[in-house]
Image (tube, rainbow, N blue to C red; front, side):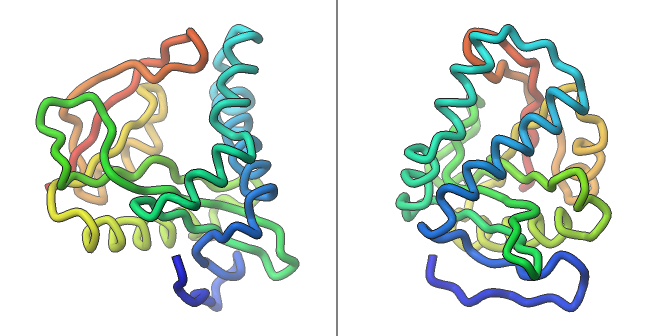
Amino acid sequence: MAASPMPDPAPGGTLRPATTADIATLAALKLACFRETFLDGFGIPYPPADLARFETESYGEGRIAAELADTSHATWVCEADDGTLLAYAHAGPCKLPHPEVTARSGELYQIYVRGHAQGLGLGRRLLATSLDWLGTHFPGPLWLGVWSGNEKAQTVYAAAGFRKVGDYHFMVGEHRDAEFIYRRD
């Protein structure tokens, strides 16, 4: 994406599209956010082999480079004044296992804020940016998956007009996380 940065006078620096120069730091950010959320925050006891496989497949630099190169996807980061990445969002065509998903459906894949940066409004800014982009690129309904135990995120998504329409299993290696499918028309 070749959009200009969107400076904001609020704490948290700049919200901008991720670029290939961000691959290594974005991979590290994604891994850190996953660990803070699911291991430290929710204490999910993933089997070590499953966790290692998932982290390698999902947060390796090759995977991040492929996501950034895919023109049907968009990724944004929030960057502190010192260049540290604090948060990110990733969106693209819907890949959730629901019978009503079509090629016209978009999905918010991920939106995460580092623990020490929560409360700065970064998640709200990323959500608004992601939903605007999805609405422009996908005329069908918008979708997202959320872990069944993340009630805070479910509340945020419900306030943004999403409603639960299904369930599925998100695989972390061979470990199955119970997830909810949310849709916004």
